[in-house]
Length: 297
View 1 (cartoon, one colour):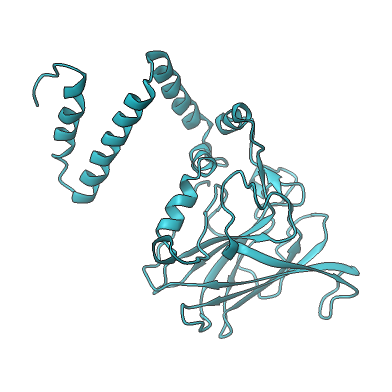
View 2 (spheres, rainbow, N blue to C red; view 1 turned 120 degrees about the vertical axis):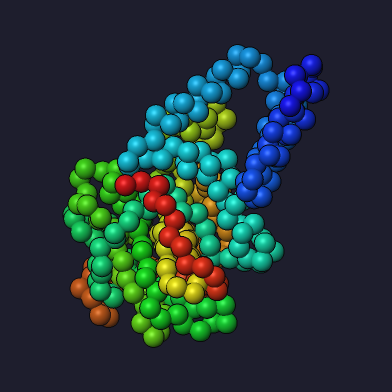
């Protein structure tokens, strides 16, 4: 590598070094990263003060990431990066609908094994009863048996159990296995839309941009079986605010589930005279079954 003589010589010199990376895919990524980062600095005329502020922000985001909160995942969603990565890797490269979606920052390992039709409410959680039916098929519409399915969602106060000391461990979380019909059925309480944390770096960004921090009500799903690409999804209830202004840019038409209100007793369960049902169908693609790294512990 030659000694850098001026501004124009710097980027080619860095790219020359990146080109020495032995692993081809890593080399491709690093070369592209350098081109775009250097291009960003040049295009914006980034000042020394702004550069120091940016590195301080990244340091702060690392410090704000804990066992129960992942600031970088939250930021990736708030910039639309998470959705972009998901959409370009599914649905025939983003050309067709997909029920793949964002993992989000709150998936945990070891959800409790739960029987079909059972409740995932594990501590006092006031709210309207909700009965959920999710159908899982392959690309041809054939039910998928033997799927291991994690489900989880926020409580009616807008907090996941790991955020809320008043909830029991793994409240509103469960692990199910599909039978020959490819179905998962469970009882819960109706979720609500909720704000993402606003006391961190992402919250500061939203404030200076004049953006709200709200997410529409949704239920998370992760379905795993050898021979299929792991399905990661979020199903948004159609009767909720912020469907068209999700702070994490996660809502697509294929992810809107049907929430129905029912008046009168539930035909099979002891439920109040007002209850809700949520239904949706998921299509799995053939591929390698791999679990993601949990964003929290």
